[in-house]
Image (cartoon, rainbow, N blue to C red; front, side):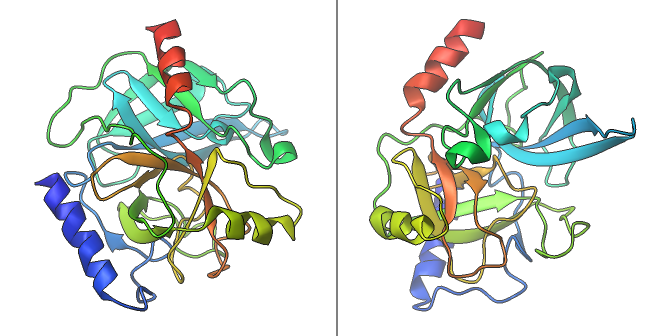
Length: 264
């Protein structure tokens, strides 16, 4: 049923030659998605303390890879204490559903943030207790191959719905469509801005929609309901013709397995 639902969504998008959603149908805007259709999606809430000792919170997305393993972007947990990471699952509402804490957080050893164009932007979170799997919470498999240009995909998250309003994060899980972009064209485009695109990154875009702040670490999923990427970075979510960058989880499958085995 889940595969059928995602296939119908993607099929509907492909029928539209222009493939541009209306303004109210974007993650920056977004059509609602129920957690039952994307039960691998989780909401991450990280506590941070500023220089004046005042606590605040950052939000990201993530996916359930195993019942006790969450995948997300390394930049989401950069300089965050493990005890300050909370994982919410099983609900379409942000920071809702059931809560589980993290016992260990492992970022890729070669991740070096903006200084390296956010290469190796991937992290494994080990949960303090396993997630009870069911209709509202289930694992997702990683695809066997890197998707080719033109491959349709779905992205979901609770991030900002207005690029210029930090308070516009969605209370409800939203989704939109995306198309995998040609890697070489994406690499050339980003090179003009002084950034480089590696083979461990995927470029994707639906012109007129996409992810924004708060969607990082969330899933990029193909029509077979397989994970192909994690939302990583872009040059600004208000730039409709610039592809967004996702961590290519297919490339990191062996690293993920090794990281999970170390801590299992």
